[in-house]
Image (cartoon, rainbow, N blue to C red):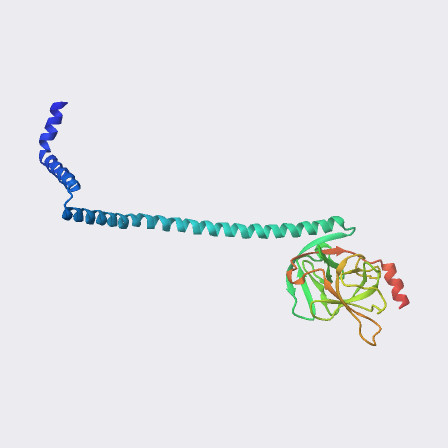
Length: 275
């Protein structure tokens, strides 16, 4: 063992001597307090420190860049997930409201999706993805969880066109839920509906709920239409001006129900004879 160590030292004696002399030189430089030596020592330390910082920045730069890329990808993934969860939550709320409406109803309801919408005319309409094959017929009411939306105008085999409340041709027999005051709901343009034929002396107040009345031959009674947002007296007129905010937001209409409501034909026949 000792002989082998001796052979190794003998073989690398030149390198070992150089290393020993360098070590002695470094020790002497470190212990020497000469001003020139101290200056050289300070410059060497500063140079080594600068080179170490410069070389050490390169791996840190690439590491930070890699981490930044990973974080950006993670941020995009989380943003997409949040967006999908928000959309699912809104859809869940809407479906729960619709199902709640269906469970409370005494009539049969057929769910439908809006596949076409026109809100730029005086005769605004929607197109839905169900038709006569699903039991839809003309004049059946259209409702949402927020109230009355309109009625079916035309029904094909697989699709149907609905006439919205925002349509100048549609009239709905209505009444104020609180005071039982009767009137006719009509749209005359703008965002609001008008409850017409309400005498100036009758009790209608802002905040009153307006619903369909028993006098209608097309709509079941008790369906919410909207809320009174203003009343106004016109000098010399017999009727007051009552504006109603619709319960349904037609700009966001995506799903609705067709109410399978068929009027009593005997009543309709008798009323036609009287008129």
